Image (cartoon, rainbow, N blue to C red; front, side):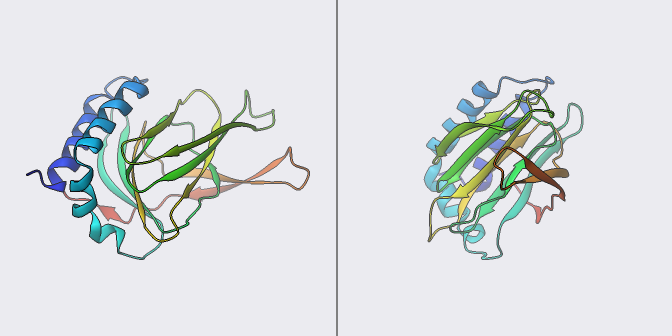
Length: 192
C-alpha cells in the first residue's frame, strides 16, 4: 500500500516535471495530478488527517520549489466554511486541485487594469478536480470551503513564488474594486 508521503512526492514530482517551460500545458498537468489524487484519495484522506485536525486556521505548506523556471508547489488547509477575500496571483499562472473536501472558486478577469473586473463564473472542485488560470490575463478569484464541518485540503502549483499579491474589495458602486497589498505566509515545509 502507498504511503501518503509517496503520493505527495508523486504530485510534487509530476508538477515539477511538467513545468519546465515558461507556459506549461495546465490542462494536461491538471489531468495528470488529478489521476494521482483519484487513485490515492483514501491515502490522502488518512495520511493528511493530522493536517485537517490542526485547527489553526487557513495554512499554506510548501511541498516543493524550483527556481528556473520558477515553480512552487503548496498544500493548503481550509478550515470549515473558510472563504478567502477576492485576490490575484501577482501575474503568475496557477493550478488549484482538491485533495480532500470541496471548494467553490468564483473567478473574475479583465482585459486591462484600466477596465472593470468581469465575473467569469464559478467552479466547484472535489478530490481530483482542478481549476487553473494563465499568467497573461489579469485574474482574481475567491475560494470557499463548502463544508461547515471538515477542513478541506488543496494542492496549488504556481509559476513562481506567490510571496506578494493583492486582495480586492468591491466598492458600493459595484464596478470599482479597491486593492490592498498582501504578503503570503507559509506555515512550513511538508516532508516527503
